[in-house]
Every structure is written in structure tokens, then in C-alpha cells.
Image 1: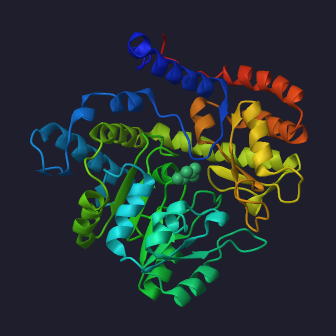
Image 2: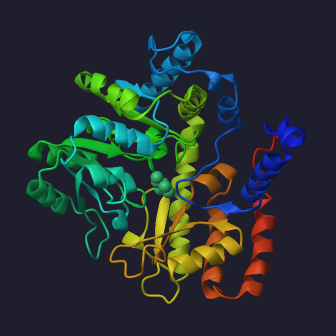
Image 3: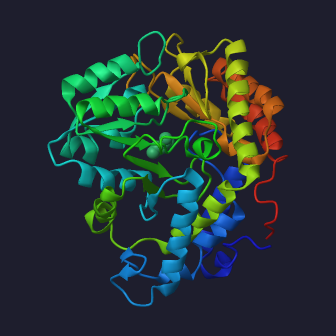
Length: 420
Ligand code: DSN
């Protein structure tokens, strides 16, 4: 089967070459960014087709354009599969991203100036959970709970105390760099005590939730948002789930016309394909391997002398804490980049370096697990991380290691059915 972008080779060689270069980068290296994954060839194919031509503002059966009968069926199928996957009553599959999903939900649950309470970005939270540089921190009065010093865990007593003091309109649970299990039932109890809506952003762990490997927020939260491209392994995009019918009209309005125009029906088709994949028993096996790989990698890094935030992981990611070392997150990210291992620098609790430098490295196993790496392979990765750390400024040494990583990565072909 031809690569889907082969059609560009003669028509637009510049873009063709760029896509080829990215494909090569993805094939030749090891992808350890915790929020990335490799969508199936089927998911990718369902994004590149004529559904991209259609305007469909509104919802299935209630559109502002004619000719929507087919995209209505596509979107209805995506909603049906998604609600089945997560056991939710209602869903909107139109958000273009997780940030858009959060914007739509916040727009209808809170008014400008209302208080919102989420996990501090520097402690593993997310930009859209109230960061001052984001709409959520500009429009709302944002407050933050932090990880408990020492354990690096979310301390529910602190969350409760903070919520009682601040009385937020929205309590947000969810993280982009937290390696432990979230207690959604307790978050909901706290939200009820202070009269807040509980919004859970499960973007990072959605695949684990779908597979039953992390408790589901769906029975507890007023509203759940997620992206579809992280552990869930679908196209880049977002969705919203909820159970209370009285919220339906408002949430749907929050997406359109509140924060978006025409939905991307080609991406919605790819979301439907992703949800169907996630409903298969093999998806659970995949997520089990993701979690096992993360755990094995965490232990292998600890054995090599690294400290991890919270001492380990329950999920798909871990955070190396470099606070006590002369090497910064930025330096280690760059050194790993030179050996074809992609990670991102990340702040750690009690961060002393700037957010552009940081003392942390976030590592996730979803993408390499899709690629076929298993627990024994995590030892190699831990060795390479250690060697990059030990030789962070030795470009000649790193260049040698790069060859080793690349020949290892090529043993796990990406999209083996594509030929050119
Ligand atoms: N940027 C994503 C992440 O890397 O976790 C969150 O939106």
C-alpha cells in the first residue's frame, strides 16, 4: 500500500519532502513524549478524505447547511461509539482539541471573573486549567492546588481546604504530568461540599480509563473532557462527555456557537475509527503493556541512580527529577534529542530553574509500546538515558549512541504496510 502522501511527490515536492522527513524522524527515533502516540493507518486514512470538504455547523439532524445527511451519520456513529466506550450518556465529538473542549465547557459552566481551581501547572497541571497566560487564567480568577511536599502526591486534604477557602465555580481534576492515580470520587465529594462543578480533563489517561486500568471519572464528574490522540491513540482532537441531560443544551452550545465554527467531520470520522479500535480486547492488552513498560522503565531508571517525582508511576508516564543534579531538564532533553530519543523537559515540584530550563524530564511509554517495544526493551532505554546524562556535553559520544538508538528503532517498523 502506498503512503497516503505519495500523491504529492510530483505535484508538491516541497511539502512531500517535509512529510517524508517527519516520517523518517518518527521511524528512526524513539518517541517518549508522554502525550504522543502513533495512530493506526486506518485512523490516518480516515482523516484524509472528502469529509474534509463539508461544512456542518450545528449537530446531527440540526445543521445550518444542506447536504449533511452523510456527515450526520458519521458524527452520530462517533458519538455512539464514544459513549459506549466510556459508559457515558452524552457526548460532543466536535472539539478540535483538548484546549477547545475545556474552553467550551468553561464558557458554559462559569462566567468571566468566576473562580476556578485546578492543579498548578508547575506541579503537573495543564495550561487550560487556569494558567495566567491562557484564556482560563485571563477570563477566570484561577487558583491552584499543589503536590504535597515530600510525597509529590495530590493531597486531597489540601484540595478540600483550598476548595472551601476559594469556593470555586469549577473544580478541575486532571493533569499533564502526574504519574499517580486520581481519586475522582473524592474530588466529586469536595465539589459537592462547595457547590462547584467537577470537570475532569482525562486527556493523558483516557486510553487507560477506556481499558479499565485507571478508575473512570465518568460516574463522578459533571463533565469529562479529553483529547483523542494521547493514550487513546486516535486523531488529534478533543471530545466532551457528561451524564446529566440538563447540561446537554449548554455544553453543545459551548462548542458551537460558543467557541467553534464548523466541525472537522474528517477528524470526527477518524475519532469514530479510534473509538472502535479502543473497544477491541486488543486495546486493553496494549494499555496493559503501556503501564507495564512505564513501570519497568521507572524501576530501571531508579536502579541507575535517577530520582523520580513521587518515586515511580501508576500510569503511562514518569518524571525524572534532576533538581539535585548539575544537569537541567533542557540539557538532558537536548542530549537525548541528539541520540534520537524524543522527550520533553518539565518543571518538577519545588522547581528552582526557569520554566525554559527546568529540573525535570517527562517520559511516557504510549508511543514506543504502539511500536512494539516491551519490558525487556525498557532496560535499553534506561541505559541510553543514563549514558546521555553522563555525557550530556560530549557530542562525539552522543553521535555514537545515536547510531545505536537508530538501528534499534528500525527493528520496530512504523506502518509496515506502507511502501513507496
Ligand atoms: N501538551 C500536552 C502534553 O504534552 O501533555 C497537553 O496538552
